[in-house]
Amino acid sequence: MVFSRLRRLLKDFATGEDLTPSQTAVLITLWKDGASSTSALAGAERIRPQSMATIVAALDGHGLIRRAPDPDDGRRQVLTLTEAGRERAESDRRAREEWLARSLQDQFSERERRVIVEALSLLQRLTD
Image 1 (cartoon, rainbow, N blue to C red):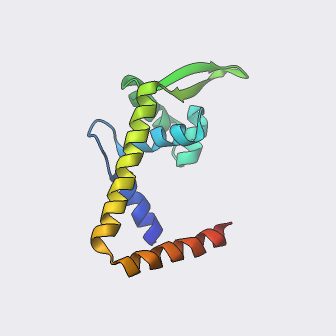
Image 2: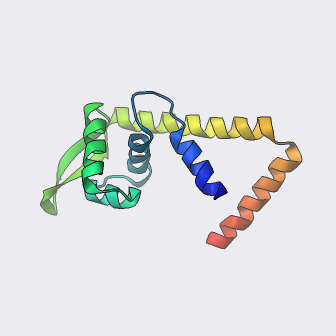
């Protein structure tokens, strides 16, 4: 539950008011994972393809993504980030990291931060 709340908090943390948290999440996904289709993004975000189409249209309207025909399936489009999209994704990610680092620094002692790092290491071992 704690990880879900932290994830939601980071997802809702916006550096600009022109994108919704869902649009920012898709932007970050394209930045991290590379080119994708609308249907693959919908599956990754666990939303309906129609909802993802709305998100993609908004990102396209902001000039953050580029659409190209899928060479393997002419009915689909491949979505990639434009240079502006890449810069925005990197900026948003940096802002989230800075917020998290600042919050950890402000709210926890050095000893508590070491405990958090150790706990994260143990949890990583669990997931590996």
